[in-house]
Amino acid sequence: MPRRSADGAEAGEHARVAEAAAAVLDAAGGTPDIAVVLGSGLGDFAGRLAGARSVAYGRLPHWPESRVVGHEGRLVVGRLGGRLVAALSGRVHLYEGHHPRVVTFPTRAMAHAGVRAMILTNAAGGVNTAFASGALMVIDDHINLLGANPLTGPNEDRFGPRFPDMTDAYSPRLRAVADEAAAAIGVPIVHGVYAAVPGPNYETPAEIRYLRVIGADAVGMSTVPEVIAARHMGVEVLGLSCITNMAAGVTSRPLVHEEVMETARRVHGEFAALLEAILEKV
Image: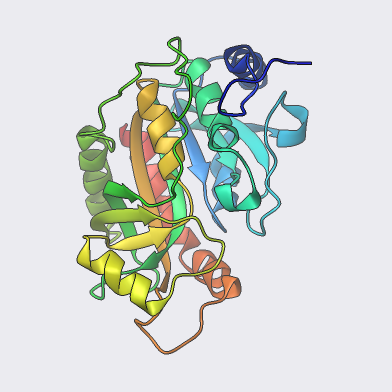
């Protein structure tokens, strides 16, 4: 049996990540130039990759599989704008019962495979009342309210330092690229701060008022652990949120996952066009 560390994670995480990274390189036929994580309802973007090859997560060693509606669960590798792109169609979440190190395993595998930049996308609730449902937001910073961190426990020095800096968790360079790409294709975008909460229930109106007071513009249940793990390994990060619904208390309507999926489908064309334009400029 594998030895377990004090935080409950099995020893040998580096070896498992290395094995998964080797499988990614084999599927890709080389080192991807960039990886894109596709959030709820956004997985169809992978269909834009030329010469795409698809591998189900279940066929990648140690890879966690999501069982959330809207997260397909496959790695798609292909070319876009002359670059080799690895698209992760779906992710796992803490609210599914996963340990933070499991949630960030794909991020670590991509970084170990040599990926130096990642675009992390998500569906989020709008906290900022100036936003509208369907808005596309570039994440400038985040607030971690998950009560969990993928770096908790013994540090794996081969991944990164014990105390990584998060001043520029979201790359200023890539955010500028996103602005240029959006302007070039005429897609309106906003900028803001993303707050990550555990879920899976949606927030109460009082919690949304609290988030607004502490500086959040959008709220969701993902992304932040992946950002932390990516920056720990020196990977440049761009975060993009699709504001699929206004958060609790902003309108009188109850929140349902079907609305999230419907809005994601409605703005899919704009979101995919923005992603494509960014990838061509990175």
